[in-house]
Structures are given as structure tokens and as C-alpha cells.
Length: 210
Image (cartoon, rainbow, N blue to C red; front, side):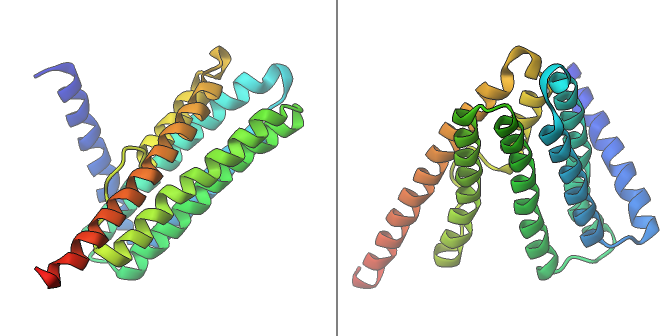
């Protein structure tokens, strides 16, 4: 067994223990989803209040807090299945809250760069926030038309990992690089989904004729 597989197995075991404990408490999965939003808002506040010499420390705290929020994001669905509380509304609620969490994090970064008069990065964060929302929107709209649209790389887990790495390593300027990666890869994902949906709808138009 390699160390990576051992780490994955250990993480899975720990996560399952957390799920089992939460399942015994009979807590609502929607409550867990909402708690994750609150934690992400706290992380956004750390971004927003970061300034000058304390910026790297505040970014580090924000990154660690986002990791904590990610735990709630990973367990809410598992708890729903373990307690037989899976519902259509739960999936909808989780998706909506995820969008609010994303906006909160990027809004915190936007405030940070605005307070530092770094207008270029204010615009970059605004663009990234829009592009990330469009990644989710294009999938939702496409799946309403063609059933499935899971193409593209920059899904929410990849975006969150990118932000976490940027926050934890901000002292080396990684957050700026992370924003560029998010801007480029999210835009590529949106274009990919638009093209995929176009090709799929055109293919379906030809099916009755065939």
C-alpha cells in the first residue's frame, strides 16, 4: 500500500466516523449545508479584514476555515443518505447555498484588494466570481435541456482547492496566480459546456429525421 492510498483510506475512515456521529444526532443535512455557508462567510471576513503586515496571517486563517467548511460540504449528502433524508429540495438547497458560499469568498477577496487600492485585482476577482457562477449556471441550464453536462475541468471542488492553496501560500504570491488560473480555466470550462450543449442539441435535432 502506497502512502497516498493509505492517506486516502485513513481520510475516508475519519470522514465516515464524522458522518456516523452526525447521523446519530439526527441533525438535518440542510442544517449542515447552512453551517458550511456561515463558516465560508467567516473566511470571507478574514479575507476582507486582511491588510498590510497581517494579510498573510489572515489569509492563512481564511484558508484553514475554508477547509473546515469543506468538511460540512462533504458530509451533508452522506448524512442525508445515512439517515434516509435524501430529497430533491435538499439537492436544490445545497446547490443554492454553494453559490452563496462561492460569492462570499470572492467578495471577501474583492474587499481586500479594494482596500489596498489594487484596482486591477478588484476587476480580476469580479471576473473570476462571474466566471465561476457561469460554470455552474451553464451546467444547470444545459442539464435542463439535454439531461447531463458534466464536461469541463473547473468544477467547484477544483475551484475551492485553488482558493485554499492561494490563501495558505499567499506570502509567496500564490493567491494572485490562483486567481489567474481560476479566470482562465473557468472561462474554458464555460466555453466547453456551451459547445458541448450546442453539439448535443444539434445531434438531437437530426435524430427524428434519421
